[in-house]
Image (cartoon, rainbow, N blue to C red; front, side, top):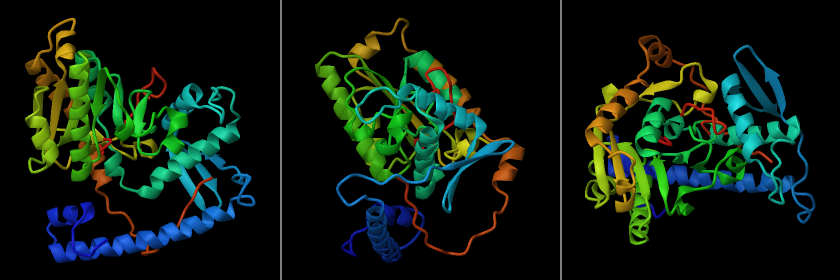
Length: 360
């Protein structure tokens, strides 16, 4: 960090009301702390390398404890929690999509220890990065609307825990791929089809994702292919993403929904009783389609009907009064410590899940 220019974190802090000097000072401190943690992780990683040449040494397997409403997976002093429903979902995904080191299908015949180790690594990764808000997603009701009206069959920003469709793009292909992920959206190049795009609500990520959608649509238009993106983002009119999408030649419909009128599936719904969280921002839903996609509908796409259906579906995820009360209950604050951890959709094609990102 050059200590002068505000990056993504600095800009977010300035958006929240901090001065530029304060924002940059915090950003520099976080950058320095992160660099120190990376060095620690590198040293820890080397401890688990067998001789530095013959691969990673075998670690102890994670231990599972079953409770009434959830399960815990633990290894040494690290543990993760998952509901029974989410466990069953990950089991189905793993059965369908896990492969061995030679690329052969292996999920169905994998022993429980291996499955639990892979699930532990997956859950610990997402627990380590915190930010459950960045992993929130649209509710199953919304995806049913997108599938029914636009034939959407895949998410471009998801995780194995919150994905509705079995196949999805996600942030961590190394731990997610065994559960249906095809990797990062940044390297995903669909030529045709229909996809939901709900990036984390971070301006830089939103801008890059919108630009990538536009590039893919332009390529598909030239190739005369049917390609559709349903892009979900906060109503941040100052972002490049908002400008890109509202002025796109491929824009077929847009819906602006007030924050009070909708919610999302919580990014931590795989370990919580209440699946929904209130949206902190207005949300914009953009439908972008190539000419061939717009002409290929068995019945003509109706923007007015889509607007009404999306609004109803988004409202389903507004937490009830009781849920909101539980979510707002003050939690005990831990002492400020720094710890370092390391590790070694519908759920199956037919099961559905709870979720933006701001994976949504």
